[in-house]
Image (cartoon, rainbow, N blue to C red; front, top):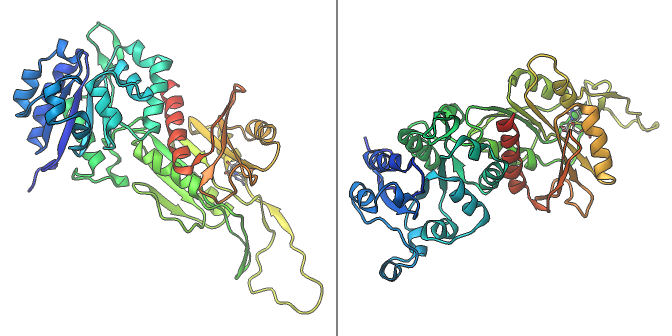
Length: 417
Ligand code: C5P
């Protein structure tokens, strides 16, 4: 049987923290699994471990200085950033995370991180309070929004005799997360491989509704709307990438299922409510579906015929409000319930009222006027409203990007709660 990381080359950026000593063990673990490891040490890292030790364990040269003329001549930081399958940053210090999040590149390690387009996995390690600081959490949200994967930090005793989250994940956990990211592990990236996943939503259960509902009038006709399901599906995909176990309850859509997500297909609002209730409990529930507010009061068993008389009148009945039902649950309510509001005018005013009426924790208002990003389109202009009255307005973004940023924010809220 071949090794899980056979023929993979990993660029290992070692940051400057006490956990750097564990990065040496990580080199061994990665090599045991078949990977080639190219170490890059920050100046801070060299206070804790020597380039020589890293090079000896990697069996190849360790890189340290951006302005090493010999190095620039024979390799160059851009080549270094390309000549691998993935980048692992371990330990990822608060400082290194801040540089990555802002694109500040004063040394070789951060220049490589800025120049690379490879998948990146970071293993944060820092003091508990530095980890909890809003600046670090903001940087974390930016990085996960940029698609960076995260493993750890673990909770436990730290070098400064403090306890809490901040310890770097163990080398074997980092190696597992890397396999997961590269899809080389025995479990693959499927839903059932949720155990042991890395990322800011690792170990969390997430429920997402998406798409329109179809409300039958008779066997051939139905009431529907223009929802494509793109935004809800993008959120489900981003949550899976962030390590969550995701169930997506989707109305009828023509877009593909997101990878690594359990998909439950439904047609009507009532079936969607039943599927949502069956999928609970969850830590986070995101109601992105454009559920039909009404359905024909009675579904005709056979096709309604044109018989030359007046057109038939459609009697409508109100559909259950799935979001309000779940947000109002007394027992087993998800910790974070997120609603959507698609509006064409007075977006914020309507959204504020909806947030209060539905009882959710956050509301994503999307402007579906022609100027904001027509319903069913690829872009979205969103405002994020919280219960405390705060409103964030994001620029018009691709729906995948909106999904990633939303998931990063949700993870931040769950992590802080
Ligand atoms: O009331 P309105 O349809 O504008 O509310 C939108 C929000 O409520 C969305 O999050 C949508 O998924 C949710 N909703 C629901 N069930 C309904 C109607 C809306 O979950 N019947």
